[in-house]
Image 1 (cartoon, rainbow, N blue to C red):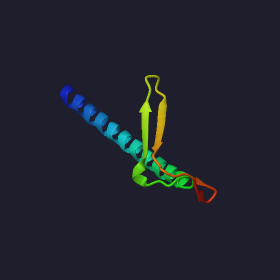
Image 2: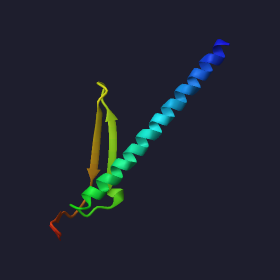
Image 3: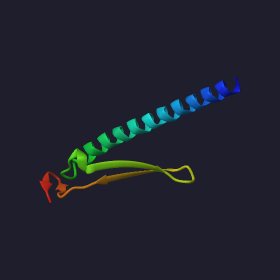
Image 4: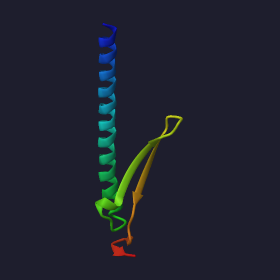
Amino acid sequence: METRIESAKERLRKVRINDTIGEIEGMLKTVKNEQYKLLTDFMTLSYEDLDVYMDITKDGEYVLTVKAVSSKLIDIGKLI
């Protein structure tokens, strides 16, 4: 009986972890989409040249990193 309970707890833990990972991945996709919309007002940028990462520090803080690679900036409607 104890083994069944432990097995059920482990399955539930894995489901919760997978749900959390899915939620974070969805959030990062949304952040990337919004950053892309914002940054294309200021630089020529392809979607593939934009990366969004999230790390968790040992103190439990979240660090969001956005990396955008572009060869041209846009200044009030003209390329720089």
